[in-house]
Length: 156
Image 1 (cartoon, one colour):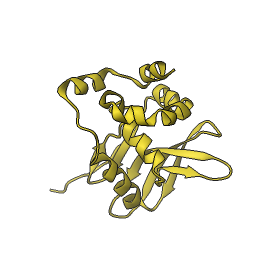
Image 2 (cartoon, one colour):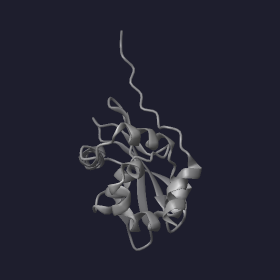
Image 3 (cartoon, one colour):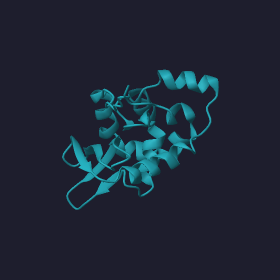
């Protein structure tokens, strides 16, 4: 009997992803306040995270993404023409084949790209997720109910 492994990309909440990227400047400006408050840090936007064959799916929370995008990592791609934010990593750790879901803020468009460096992206994200703030039970319950839309209203 053989085992079958698959890594399907989680469904995306395109409305919440759009809100995230339409307000990226506000979120980055308030990064420290967001990172300091676990109920904000742990906001999950469906469609963000890591999916890999043999490793499954791991969510990335708003705080994880803000840290990845602020720490000069591969998760933000800047060129003269555009700035792209990586919000989902998918692929094959053994071969390195990588599928990135990105948002180009200059073109205001979602894109998919293919690379060969799964481990580089994964290691950066893994380092961030290992140093997440601790959550109390109350904060875990808040995290389940708070949305990116609610956070943006609070920040404005």
